[in-house]
Length: 119
Image 1 (tube, rainbow, N blue to C red):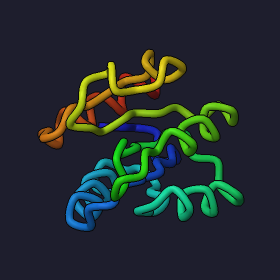
Image 2: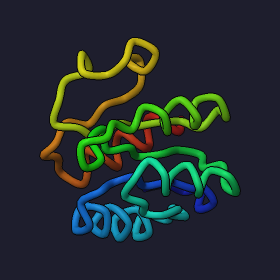
Image 3: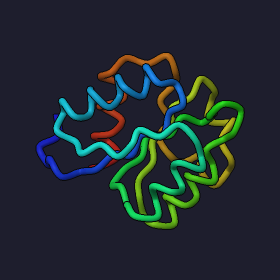
């Protein structure tokens, strides 16, 4: 998939098995994975020392939305792909133009969204 092995991808996902699957898939595709982290607080702490090229953001993290993290990432020019069971109408206006992969998804769908976003 990705020929540039140095692209870093942050995973923000509160479902442990999903996060582990994403991590394995991304590492197999040659990405450097940051996280995974399962909360807004953990993501914000990680962003203090890291600037990912792209972030996969689960919209709902145990009842808390991820939009604070998305805004922080966007201010640092990181690209974002949202992962959610909701439509883009659930996203705040400032983030509706960002790619969205609807859950449940197939692994190739996520990888394709990442590749398009990093182009």
